[in-house]
Length: 394
Ligand code: ATP
Ligand code: MG
Image (tube, rainbow, N blue to C red):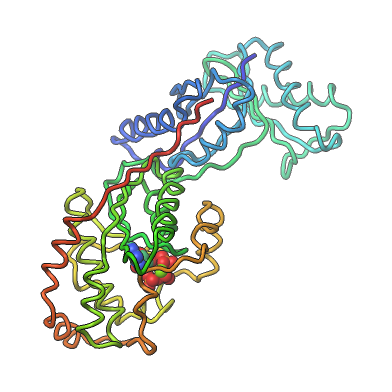
């Protein structure tokens, strides 16, 4: 009997001719995620099997696999030979564990016979094994509609027996859908926005605009931490910290007060697009949601959007703050995002920011400074930090 973890994938099934590419990418990404754990990942028919790990490492391996994009669900299984006696013994062991907290549970057996040479069909396997378990465990009752315990049996190269499954992160494997540039502030929204694109297989580079000394070291540290936390999901985050003080100060002194925030956002977009080109990224990502703040009215979104030609992805556009917070908590960024260090945007916030900025006014204001020079300088001086998911090192 061997402990293995059975990994199922979701959407890759839809991929037709490209399927081997996605399957390979998922395999690679799981191997990277588990590096240092001693576990081996094997590809089977529509499944992966993780094995060869110490029992004490199982929890951590499962926690890690559940974060890998492309993984639909996971089961802790016992792998045995296809000899019926062995299958029964394994099923009893799995059931004993499943009954730990409730001796009088209801159950059913789901059987799947991938090896068509196996003498019994799925129905027969399920029926026989169900009967065996009923005999072995007196408190058990069958319920085929809403069972508390579902015992899975899969007859493949070996037999795999497990109780239930845990959901994974879903999505598409790391890096299978190109690269995008995330505008990462220290707030709640942008890390969630990055997570959502990353989940679709988009590799993440990020820019953070830092206005030292107006925003301190700790504000920067916070964004480095957020990038590290994101990398636990994405695998890797390449973060560029962009010095923004000179441009921001210039805008504040030269331009109309009520337009400062939108002007700043336009500069951010331009710089982000330049950084994206350097990174081979094909789109920008922001954490904006319609109407959340003055700079996120439709008019304001239109005017920041107008500065770039790359597509801008705003995965949170239709979400409420509470919905975003729920995801931030689930992915582990909320606590860091709510640390109280100033963001550069809060510094020069006017009392009455314009909510319907006019493009002609924006262009007029931008004429007042040689912003291209500031942008070149900021891009020139940005500093790269690379964060990778930590090895398990078990
Ligand atoms: P967040 O919670 O992501 O900070 P927010 O609700 O505070 O968002 P804004 O401050 O208007 O909204 O920022 C809108 C978007 O602009 C952010 O989601 C982020 O993508 C980008 N952004 C804002 N400030 C910065 C910054 N200092 N560096 C990089 N991107 C930023
Ligand atoms: Mg913010």
